[in-house]
Structure formats: structure tokens, C-alpha cells
Length: 112
Length: 111
Image 1: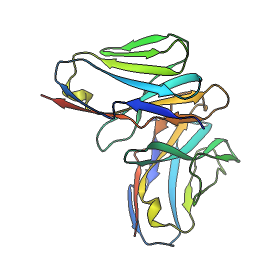
Image 2: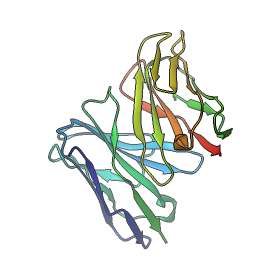
Image 3: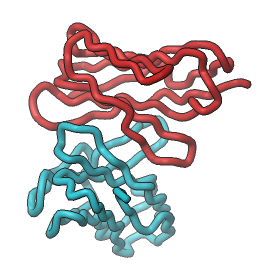
Image 4: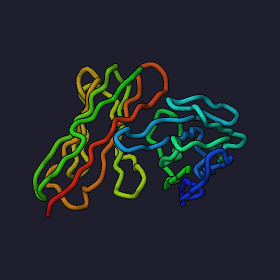
């Protein structure tokens, strides 16, 4: 079954404690991206990757890091989380950047 | 930078009635996509429009891309409770690969 798997689904952490949200896809998609969703602000892109070892900043990259060492995985890293990073995060993948995306189920992160 | 605005932000619809949600871009788009997000769920891709003036239908949903490729609309006929959710448009700039999402229209259906 084609899917995009995000882990964890829910996470409560404390300010400054490094964390990683994982995203894995089994569709051999080249394009992967991270979004955060906040009430009234829609979906804002954090980082995206056009292919392995190719990553670029989206609209709100500050405080986040990503890596794309292999095609199927695109982890989102928060080196020193802060409360303003409390949000709902979605990983999205696509055959390429120019087609519709498949979203993961989301990770609800709370930073206290 | 590119901005994509959706109106209305909220839409209360009586079951069985029609409604339309609109999407407007500050720049010319190469294509536009529509997604639906059910409450508590994740966005699900519905459709992509590419050509100026293009109209596509999916059962009770009609999607339209404006002639100037700066706006789009989603019209739903005979609304059902299964239509509840937030509908997002996402516009891709004519130059580059950037996809910008609108703020969404949250649809609530009154039985």
C-alpha cells in the first residue's frame, strides 16, 4: 500500500531539547517537503527536497533542519525547539514538484 | 512574495444547497491544485488545473481556473455531510516550483 509515514503522531517536549520527526515514503517519489499548519495561516512550507542530497528552504525554515540521505526518508530536525514551534506538521511527497502531493498523517508537536 | 488568498474563510451550508469557494493569487500561476482536509485528518489531493479557463468536474465538485491564471474556484452542488472539511487551494508560481497554499475555506454542513 502506497503511504507516507510520519512518526511520532503526537509529541510534547520541553524548550531546547533536540527532536527529530521522521517521514518515510514507499512510492519512490523524488519530491518531499515539510509543512507546518497553524490556525488561520494555512500550510506553510518549511523545507523541501527535489531529490537525494538536494534540499532547499521554504517559507519558514528558521529553527529547522532537514536531510535527504536516501530517497525514502526526509527527517525534520529541531535542534533547539521553542514554544513558537508548537504546531501541526505534515510531510508531503510527490512524483515531482509539479504534481499533486501525498501527505502524511501529521505530527502534533507541543513545546513547553 | 507570492500570496494566495481564499474566501470565504468559513462557509456554513444547509445540506442540499450549493456553494462556491474562491482562490486568488497575487501572481500569475502555472497551475493550481485543490486539497480537502477532513477534521482531524491530513490534506488529500483532489485535482490540478493547468490550462487557462480550464474546467474539471468530479461528481458534485466543479473546479475552474481563471482565464488570466490568477484565480480559481471550487463549486459544490447539493452539499452533503460528507463534504465537511477544509478546502485548500495551492498555486504554483509561473516561474519556479514553489507551491503556495491559501488559508483554506472551512465548510460546515447543517443537516
